[in-house]
Image: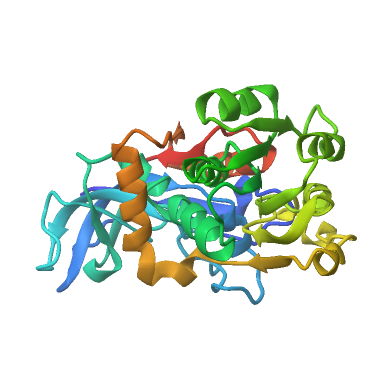
Length: 332
């Protein structure tokens, strides 16, 4: 009988995730009941939000329970079906968790087309990161054609798309990323107007140099000192979009509000956070826009594909050390 490799939460991490926070085991594969399907999981999405899901406490979604399969979005192929909605051979996306096989309700999954885009793309530009970029910029950020945008985490799964969408709208885009290679990628491959290397450059000084008239939208993926630096460069009616604060995910005690928050008052500006799940009823709209731009060759995507489900804890930490380059995906 085929065995299912599962990654279950054994204990809640303190600081960086360690291997002993999870139990990796072989379990029997359960055949699907009525309205269920059995899916072979091919690719698993790794996202910064996963670190927050491991913490006990109130949030926009309940934490992963001790002993539960680690939560994740995944794509794979239907191997057996007890549902009229999905057939054997269909490829699907959904919250199937960090495991090699998934048995569950068909209604929890969505069909994807491997002929339209490679399967990992449905975990990136055509998946949650793509929807995060699209709705975060266009709805929460209320981005208008031709505005000046600054985006941190600029070479990452979300940031790279945020900057490209703004360029498609005729904007001026300044990225902030870690390392010369990532900054070169943002400028030469993605078409950003400039990119600041926070590891080797003075971010506040470079922002002042590049933004003599300030910024209209700051899309924040990191928090901390970079958030403060950007808030020193607001234009009147600027919008600060809080998407993430990856700089503090492994030590929440270090997360603090920006000292210069009164700039929001001075410039009649707005800071607003958002969770992409709030736009779930509009995902079809966002995906249609991304597919159109992709088919026209106007968007570039980069996936960082790592292999081996047993490496999940190690690969997850790549998000917090900056070791990944592009959308981080685990091939099962």
